[in-house]
Amino acid sequence: MDKYHPEILRQYLGSKRGGSIQDVDHTTKQAADICGRCQGASEAAKGPEPVSREERASFGEKVKPLEENALREFSISHDLWIYEADFLTKYNERLIGAGAEQKVYLSDDGYKVLKVNIGRFHSNWLEYFNRLMFHRFLFPSTAYETIGFTEDEGTFAIITQQSFAILNQGASRETVEPFLNDHGFERYKNDDYYNKNIGVKLEDLHDENVFVDDSENLLFIDPVIYFETLDLKLGGKHIFHFPFDQKNP
Image (cartoon, rainbow, N blue to C red; front, top):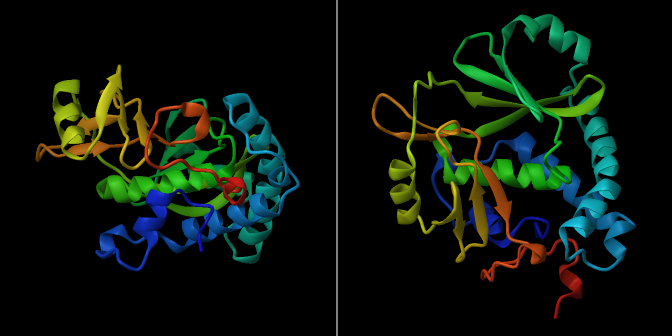
């Protein structure tokens, strides 16, 4: 069950976990399941497992269109599709930030932000949704929730929602590193961290992605999460193989 999730994420999703704050929103889990089934049934999954970054990128190029077609059908049938023109009519004046992969808008009530992500930095959408779910378990105070699907300048996009916070003070490395050390992550270069026990990397945890709130709590806004794969060659205990796990010794 859920073989298309990394092992550590399967554990969090399993029946032994507790605490409602960790519950994954239904739409994100459904979307991940759809993407997993698309990948597992694809022609690309019948070939050899990609073991380099280039091979994984090639695999992503083959399966991502399949995921997008299935997600589009799902979103339309579940009233989750928002036409780009309709979205912009409502939110274009509420744009508060933009990057290479996503645009950020302030919600109507001012308590949340909406992020429209085109997946440019994700080789496939299963990878993206797995990261969203694991972000919730690592950093519940800044958890993402999938609320819709759209297009951004004609490119398929996911709309997520995240609590809005006034971010005045970026967190220093001297503050972030001890916190992550306590949770099994060790810094290996710059502001990137790795936990060999669970096979997870966290990158870009600098003072523009991690902040300190008024109560001195750390807020991890946009960490880049990687589940360990063969091409990373980090020697961790858990390697994510899906959908090629049936070929592993």
